[in-house]
Length: 262
Image 1: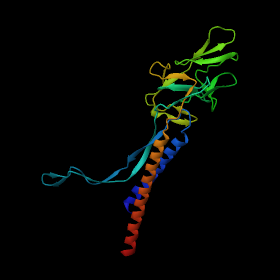
Image 2: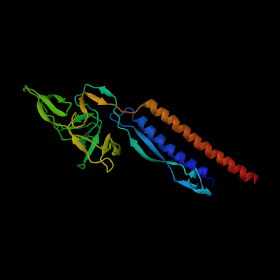
Image 3: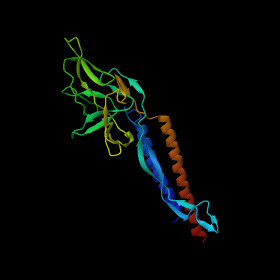
């Protein structure tokens, strides 16, 4: 079997994966706090026919080797944690992180997950929770029923205005965390990430301090997907897919010619 068939087949597989990554980015172009992904490619093993530096004659070495590649593969999908744009809202529970860091939420099994999406709501007990799944934002701050307004400072301090009281009542401080390798976090869907061995342990700190981003109340971070860039990537992947298909077609014609004429 001609090796180019298998080499081009790996190219088709790799570009299919790349197109899937691009399509997921485009599909989440409107998802608050979403971070785009990119496919990471690697070439496969090489068949070494002649080794570079090998002796070709007396006192003479080969300046170049003869190595035949076996194709390519996608080895990773890497999250890009660049800052998204800001949109302002009138909701006091819409929070945006301007800079690095994640909000911490508690999963149903008691473990922690992390999110960049600050679309929060209140549950039946007054606790601040994620809007989509109702997971409690740590450290589980509950808003009193008689609170007339909620204020979240840039450092993450939550306070409320209670009727009949002159001073705001401070309820607590939102947990903030960051990671040495945020790209190593495992996406879980629902705008959530969980810690892995590659991400390292969460580094806790205070918003706007300790290297963390500041919290902006009444604002949300949009997806960092650039639709124009993704469409260019899609066209590039499509053309590479077509070229690999043409190689397979050319090899098929070559084998057909040999079969019919020899």
